[in-house]
Image (tube, rainbow, N blue to C red):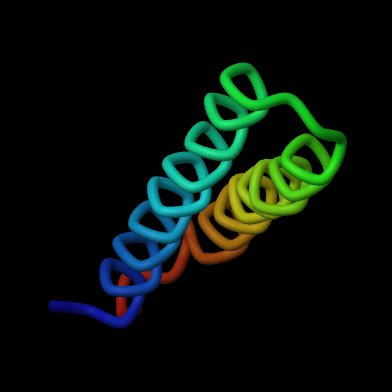
Length: 68
């Protein structure tokens, strides 16, 4: 497995984990209410979007390099 493939795999796994935790916080907010759940949900969801952006930038930068 190349370094590029490992990096993309870890980014995808991290996005999935952030999304799952963020959605769990949203569901808890809808069930129980409370602003703390909503604020807690924004952090992992924002981190997931940042990881998607970082993954796309990394892929574009290493697209021409076959040795990675």
